[in-house]
Amino acid sequence: MTLIETITALVIMSFFLLGFSQAFMPAYLAWGRAMESYKTARTIEFVAQSFRKECAKTDRNIERWKKTVSIAKELEHYEFTEFRQGGILRALKATCIISGETVDIIGLCTP
Image (cartoon, rainbow, N blue to C red; front, top):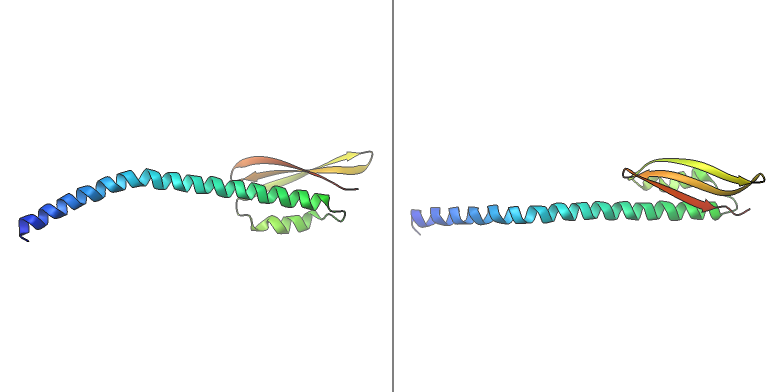
């Protein structure tokens, strides 16, 4: 190969790589957003299921639930509200902020 052919091949290859990266980058960013949404959905599902299971137990312990969901990195904050009827605890409501989204979860309590 001569010097001119080598330079021409490098220029053509650089144009190809530049065009390929421009086409690949939006797809890569969309993939990242989709994975982030999937993680958020899975975290919401995990938190909701574990909260409802804990509420359904007769020996419920919110501190045990807090330890269980401490592995969820997307869970930023939570608050609890008790719903009583005639002095009996009927349900617990957890208001959670998961990845910036507010989610309300209601768990029915067994007497």
